[in-house]
Structures are given as structure tokens and as C-alpha cells.
Length: 295
Image (cartoon, rainbow, N blue to C red):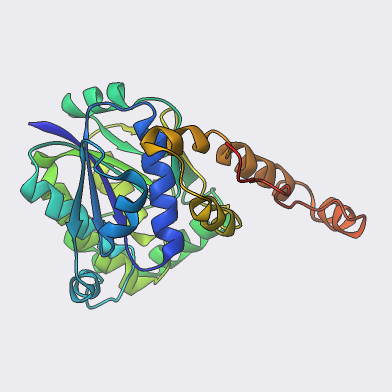
């Protein structure tokens, strides 16, 4: 039995760079877990991480990535298949994180909770009936379809809580739950093909086992900050420092959570205030320059 931190990172260099930054943030405060990177580009990671202890690569060819999207051709179905593969090959605690994440502290306590059988997702995002606009759209679509359209007539109603699936924690012995998530995802996506249907499936299946715990105290998920991608490309293009410790030290120069929170605060302003600030040249943007070659 062991602890495993799992990433899927393939295709776009932007995604690979996000994963690199996340892994570096973890390695600054590790929890003695094995890092498993499901990828088509191990060399991209080794160029920065070298032979970092505890980091392993599961090379997945393009045909397998396509197959994992399934007949519904859903990109987030891949996440479920990666976890199913990990559960079949790694006995112990599995902590999956999206690439656009930053570790705020060592997840040692999180892994300990997984060992006790607790299940994690990133953070609660409200109920379907009175949550954000997308949640309410999903609720209306499912009400129109009726529960007979879901596996086993499963009921998903206005009171169902949606959790963000940027972090998922379970044990390898929870593999049957992953099969349930996969079946539910396929049914939900066929009913209403939105990008969050796999996280709704995880939210429902995880909640059937008991309270869902939030991983937010350990992991920050900056899903709303795609503007950071060119910065990360420039970051990893800088002349390489001496060894892994040099890269880890450099990561402290990029306070990604603070940047994401700044954007979120701007987006939370009333529309007229955002428009006024843009007109005054005070709209939100990344500060420049964020990087220099020193350090």
C-alpha cells in the first residue's frame, strides 16, 4: 500500500508546463508519495525535473488517449480512465490533481484521510437548483429528461451538490465507484453534453459513500487563469538554474493563487464597474514583467 499523486498531461505544451509547475510546488513540501505522470512527453518533464526521486512516468500513446475519450468523445472521460488504470496498478491512496493546480501545503494529512476511507474533491460549487447559471441549466435539463434516463434510475435533483473535480481523492479499492462514475458520466453527457458532466458524476457517486471532503486547504485550482500560460512558457524557457532546487526556488517568484484571486475579484465586480475600469485603462491584466532571467 502506498500514496500516489496522479497527473494526466499530454498534447499541448501549455498543459505540460502547468503540470511541471504543480509538481514543483508539491516537491517543495512533499508527502512521500509517488508522483505518477500519465503523459506522451516524459522528456518535457525530465528536462526540468531530471531524475527527481519519486517521480515516474506512464507513457500513453495518442491512440490510447483517443480511446479513453470513448464513444461520446469527451475529453474529461479520460480523467476517469486514468484513475481506473491507476487503481488497477497501484494499491493504496490515489490523489488526482488537474495540471492547473498549486500545492499550498504538504498533502500528508490528506493522504492520511484517504487511508481512513474519506473521499475528496476540490471544493463545493453549490447545488444544482440554486447554484451558478450552469448548475441551474443542468438541473433543468435533467428534470426534463427524468431519472429513467440515468443508470438504475438514479435520482439527481435540485438539492444535488456539485463539487469541482480539479482534485479527486480515493483508495484503489474504490475502483467499483470509478466504474459507476464512468457509466453515469456517459449517460449524463449524452443527455446534456457540457464540460462538467464528469464532475457531476463524481459528485453524485462520492456523496453516496458519505460526506465529500474539500481538498482546497491543500491544493489551489486556478482554472480561471489561462492567461498564465504564456508566462509559464517564458518561465521554463529561461536559462536553466542549477538542479531541481534552483527550479523550486524559482517557483516562488510566481504567486499564481494571488494572480488568480486578483482576476476573480475583478470578475466579481458589477458589469458597469468592470466596463468603467476598462475604459479608464484599469481593467484586470497580469502585471508586467512577471519574470526576469535573474534568480
